Image (cartoon, rainbow, N blue to C red; front, side, top):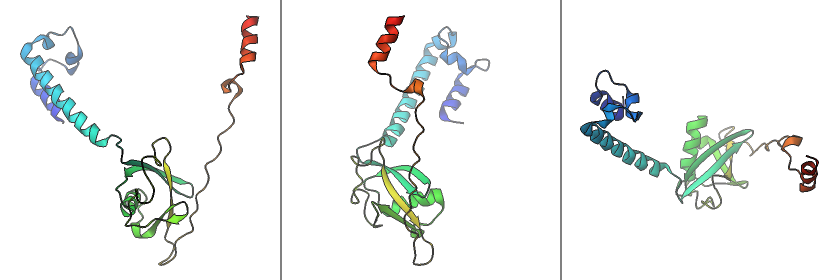
Length: 179
């Protein structure tokens, strides 16, 4: 049970429901002491939410990545200051392969574990949310051999149906004059 639930459970009278807080005609909200307590809780809640959302919102140092191997694609974000090894730890959490058994690539070049993503060329200008940068992933086959980097290309989308295709202006003008 969260802090908001405890507050409402302790504040509301036994027969009142939580819906009363949203009802403008309810006598429960007209009580001055109760409305002061509600305002205090909502201001605390607003401050808590803004603090947590501001820490998770997109900042200038966020980079957005597409980690690809064969037909698999992982979308993730990280800071420019994140090391390649830390990015491998993110992949480990998803695919359950240790960082030592992974090799990450940018443009067919192996990324050094000690470098940061910013040092490797992943910046907020090159790795945006609407156009994430691609990172290749290969796994270790044997003690000293990694599989070659292989990324399956995305399939092409199907052709748009006629009703969704843009119409030229001359055909719409003819249709309007007929009506």
